[in-house]
Each structure stands twice: as C-alpha cells, then as structure tokens.
Length: 362
Image 1: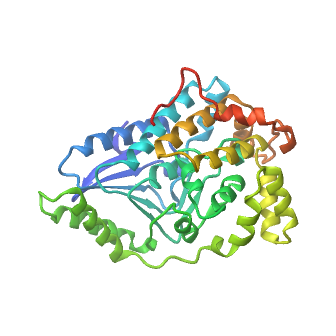
Image 2 (image 1 turned 135 degrees about the vertical axis):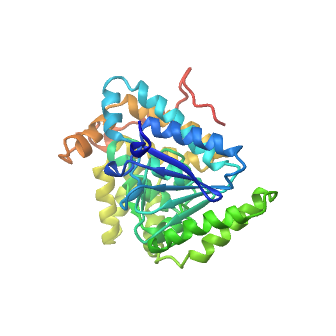
Image 3 (image 1 turned 45 degrees about the horizontal axis):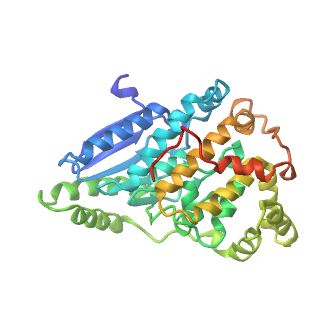
C-alpha cells in the first residue's frame, strides 16, 4: 500500500511523532491493520531519541475515530469470530500500552471520537477536545458492552454519570467529556494548527539531555497556551436525577425510577435504555459496577476481553450491527427481546473466565 493511501500515516514533525488515522471516508474507523501499525510505531518510537512526544490525530474534519470497523466485525462474527477475537486482543493491549507510554502521548479528540477511538485517545497523558467533539461509548446500541478500557473510564465518572452513559449509549460534548474524565483540555479547533506547530517546535528546541518529566512540562505549557475554558457540561445540571435513578440495583429498577421521576430527560433516557440490547444493557451494568472494584486498567481490559468475546458468541451483536449499519432499518430484533428475559445466568456468562482464552494483562 502506498504512503498516499496508507490507513495510518506516521511521520516526524520537529520533536513529535505524528500518528494520523487515515480513513476519513469511514470516519477513521479501525481495522486490525491500523491497530498493528499504531502498535509497531509506538514500540519503535519509545526508543527513538528524535521523538520527544507523540501526537494522535484523525484525517478529515469529521472526527478522530468512530470506533472499530463494525461492518467487518459483523461479517467475521457470522463466520465464527476468530478474526474479531484477535482484533480485541491486539486492540486492548494497545490501549494498555498507551496508558503506560514512556513519552507524552497527546490525543486530539476533534469531532467524532467513539468506541475504539476513545481507546486510542482517552488513556493518553494529554487529551484534548474541541467545540466539535462528540465522545461516546455507544456499544449497547449494537449489542456490545463498553470496552477498550471505556468501562473503567465510565466506572470512575462522577456519581452515576458513567452508568447513565453506558446504558443509554448517549454522547458527550466537550464539557461533559471533561466532567466525566475522558478529556483534560479544551482547545478551539481553529487553534489546533498553531498548537501542533508549537508542540513540534518546542519539543525540538528542548535540550537533548532533558528527561521525560521536562518534556511533559514543555507539552503542558504549549497546550495551556492554546487552551480555553470549556463550554458548560450539560450533565452537571442533571446529576440529581441521574444519581438517584441509576443507583438502583437492577436495570429494571433503574428504568422504573427514570420513568417515575417526572423529569422529561429521565423519561428520554429510559426510552434509550429500553431501545438498546437488553442483554448488553444488563451485562454493561454488571461490568461497570465490577470495574469500580478493579485495581488497574489492565484488570479492566482483562474483564472487557471476556465480556466482548461473550457478546461475540451471542446473537445481539450481529443483529445490532445489521440493524444499525448493514441494513440500516434501525429495528433490531433482540434475543431476548425484553429485560425480563435476560437472566442472572445470562449476565454471569459475560464475566466468567474463558478457559484457555484469557487476555492476561493484569
């Protein structure tokens, strides 16, 4: 594949290594090849003294990354899912590497940043949103459960905001992404070119013998010079009903509280939950509650691998992708079709260890 059509572009720019996800026609959705390219690049740059920091961006103006290539996932799942399981393993290992990367890792979450795009960005050291940012973990809409470390991020969001976002698949604007711990800084999109120039120049100008902490300070200074106060977080004003409703023990109780709260936004949230895969919604609640007790991102990713593979083995993932992406009739036929039809045994299957097939990061 020529450099002009590479799915990932990598190059040096001053003192930074640039990674550009380059499938703008598909909102930079991730293929397995993109995952392996990013991993190999980061592994190489970790020992490259020319690279003082890494910057991740997406080609085009619509978004950083809309997530995995779920059409390809749909086709592979129908054929047994071996390719998707391998994709999950490599993707989650990359998410863990990003969180522990030895050099400053700057992710520009401009535009749509969902699912796998969150995994490549929200575990970085410096996470930037703009006025165009739409950040989400929309997995329950297609019969999957929040993954790529997203269940850990949702579990650590203030109060019950993460449960709300996980069960509804609702999106966050820039203010909410900052509130919920998915981002650190707000930079208007018009300032991004100047910020990238400053990062390239300032890291290149730093003395050759400075340590990682000094480079991190250089990066922080450049970002601070271009950042502005973020727009208000809409979810901040909804904490009272969100925290009260989503503290219930079961999804059925959560929906009942939402419907009986008298708050129009709560009723809308209940309708979103009821429209998503009942199995995925119940598995998500269990996974998020358990993620709150896990000691590390690696432990979260280990759990997510079990959960994602269980979803891959079930009915709803293929059906959800069919309804949303393949046929686009927006009318998924979930099995079971109701929350009452999903048993505790069904949910336990998602969290159970997989004999001979564990991720093993923790």
